[in-house]
Image 1 (cartoon, one colour):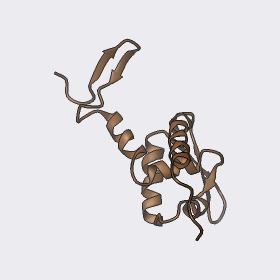
Image 2 (spheres, helix red, strand yellow; image 1 turned 90 degrees about the horizontal axis):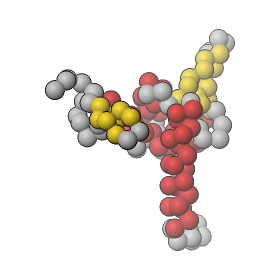
Image 3 (cartoon, helix red, strand yellow; image 1 turned 45 degrees about the horizontal axis):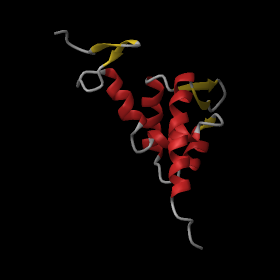
Image 4 (spheres, rainbow, N blue to C red; image 1 turned 30 degrees about the vertical axis):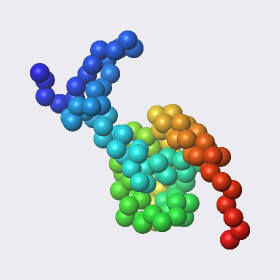
Length: 123
């Protein structure tokens, strides 16, 4: 048996075996489904945003956690990071095609959840 990522032959061709501990797809799943990964992907669904715009759109996330989450999702190929050579540098985050594909079902999931919940009472 080979070390590292395990591929399994399936009808559609070779695929990762996400149940194997060394499978790189597991890391992507962990990053997408992390506490903040889902929120970042949904926040970027319609528009590219700068760091502080993202932070303000995701209430409760610290700058440290946002930076770690953005780094992990960018390394996974889900986000693109565009740096403008200004002083200070302006950094904009957006979804790659892969990130956009993954954010669609997440958005659908949240839409279904919010439709299924009882209407909020007055605040």
